[in-house]
Amino acid sequence: GAVVSQHPSRVICKSGTSVKIECRSLDFQATTMFWYRQFPKQSLMLMATSNEGSKATYEQGVEKDKFLINHASLTLSTLTVTSAHPEDSSFYICSARQGVTEAFFGQGTRLTVV
Amino acid sequence: GQNIDQPTEMTATEGAIVQINCTYQTSGFNGLFWYQQHAGEAPTFLSYNVLDGLEEKGRFSSFLSRSKGYSYLLLKELQMKDSASYLCAVLDSNYQLIWGAGTKLIIKP
Image (cartoon, rainbow over all chains, first blue to last red; front, side, top):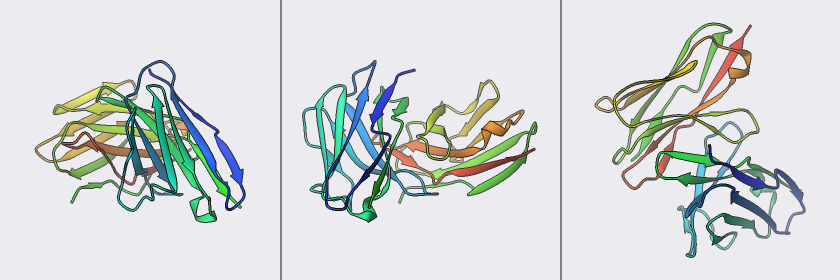
């Protein structure tokens, strides 16, 4: 099946700094990518839908100025957590859809803000 | 509103069979997915159903009844490595994935 690569898998940063997470579709072109966050023992929460060449669509309650999304090419979307705080510590996962029948997930990024 | 319900946790014995149910109420329906997620890892795709009936794939099978808004994932010959969370997700009329909270499956020897 298709492969989506997410990097880094783990990152620890200081409060107030910014962190960039990359999501790449390795063997297919993804016009749309999705960014999720997941708290322990909870399900995936969609943060935003990233469309190549246009602005991301953010879900209600997600601060677009804090979670910057850039989808510069058909194979790369980035999520930047700006001015990170401890409450931003979470598991962030990207996914890319190939057609409508299957979504492929990146490996996830465990962000810890200290 | 849109809602997907699945049990929070289930326990089963190695070698046995377990059925994980999922009921949904969504605005439109374009298919239902099952994903497996091990702790600390991203979900991996298990199955996709868009028509009524049973889809079998090795030890895993998935069933869908659109009229009842119901699906189940059947796992046979359970192995310890099947201990994971199983997520049910529905693609709504806008092709947005609506996720259930997941069912944590605990396998005992």
